[in-house]
Image (cartoon, rainbow, N blue to C red; front, side):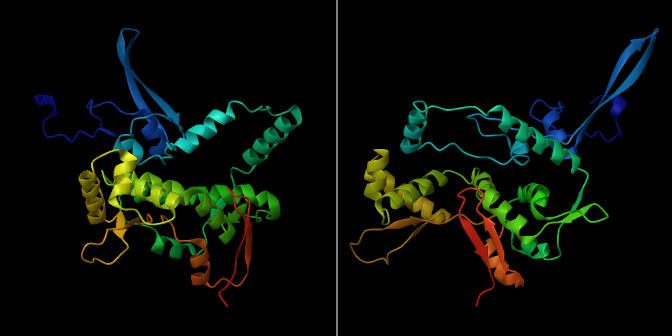
Length: 307
């Protein structure tokens, strides 16, 4: 720094490797605005003009490279299914006839968007029992400080969409998130948030995923020779991989150590991001039974008090 900046505090928001540049999308996502000042000559004098861009925005991106940590904390990540079975499903999809939306369907979707736009000013509150959700969320990673507010906003969004089914805003133009809203949001997003949190857990995660796939396919625990065969690596290397993954806690040995016996492993299920809706419902002891349709599978789910 030059002398002119001595004894001053210089604040650079969202500093990156280039030092000094501001990533505009990051600021729009987290701060809801970008403000910049441009100095130019006007009528022979220097003048400064203020430019503002306001959010919030929704951002979607794809790519093979893992996001930088500053970007990752502002996004949830859905990883590509790289299995051979998924590759075959993709290949088969190209042989099937697909049809686009007809005019009636397009009108319906446009009407939905207009109705949602009219309700965008509705205040959506979280109930008091939501404190129990906060008490039970996963807090072993700093990224949760951004992810949990995003989950809360997702609950409010689900509440807004479901308000067309059975609820009307009060005179104060407010809605309240109910248990069904929370459950639907958890069913959609819990696995996505867990996946995002696992991306930076290190070199043992691929071993855990391999053990998980092999055990599911074979219907029994995995040993070193299974890993060696799947990866086409020497058996002693497979032993080291399993040992390191077990020490990291992402897989566990499932048989008791005995002289001469094989070491068998299963994957350790990743922790939930938010509490399981069934267990939370029983903990809260809510009086009314809740019935929803699973947003992904379409199956009917009922939450009721434990008898």
